[in-house]
Amino acid sequence: MRRILVIGSGGAGKSTLALRIGQCLGVPVIHLDALYWRAGWTTVPKDEWTREVIRLVAADAWVMDGNYSGTFDVRVPAADTIIFLDLPRLVCLWRIVKRRIRFHGRSRPDMSAGCPEQINLEFLDWVWKYRRTHRPRVLDLLRSVAAEKRVIVLESRRDVERFMVNLAADGRNPGVGVTG
Image 1: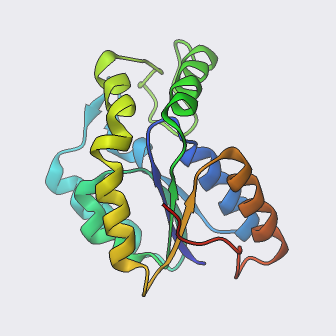
Image 2 (image 1 turned 90 degrees about the vertical axis):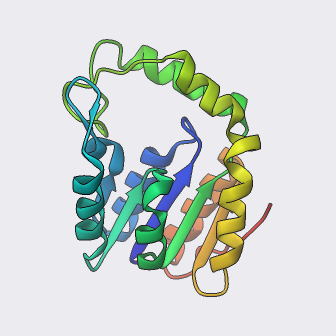
């Protein structure tokens, strides 16, 4: 495991898991949110974003967290492992609320400076509908690459902890596979 994508709904714990994996394996962590968003919650122009993602995946090793399905065509082929955090939406929503309280008025460590933590109805709606609207496409993508990539689906906090224990014990074979 040297090129790892961590994807899932907002609030699923992508950035936290990516950091933990990076520390465990000694691999650089790339938070896509910190690169996509600029101060004031403005986005990087699409062509610049695509060039940046292509540059990032060219590195020998990384743990990259973030959805950005518009760059799956670049990131998925470059990855050797894809971890999908498929947690229940109420868990994700609760984590978003906790994160908003914790980082009130300031940017998270995995976010660009000048992007103070916020919650808006559009984001909450996206998280609420994620399992119905985005999850089926993600699972289809994972099934389509499962023969050539290590695909790991974690559905609970317990799954995440079991994965990390197994990863720490043997970083080459974390002992979980495709579910869903």
